[in-house]
Image (cartoon, rainbow, N blue to C red; front, side, top):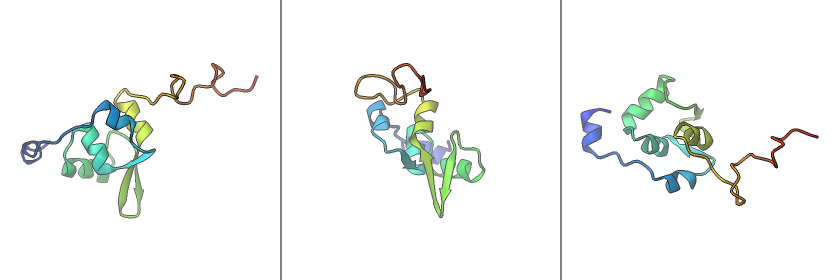
Length: 95
């Protein structure tokens, strides 16, 4: 982060804000979650060095929220309290 970015006060996102994100989010939101400035984030994305996979859709950058949550050590829970993707202990395999 450059001095000018840190002086602007990059504010991160809370855990609740992160878990409320849609399946795919814009790069600015991802930058906030990682507490990196806008120019740093876009520079990393352009160089292919962003900490998670970045999707380029036309002129827009998008980040898969699940990848971002995984990097940050968070995971979404299903209403029953199980991690998202868990299926009765069978891990999606047929019996």
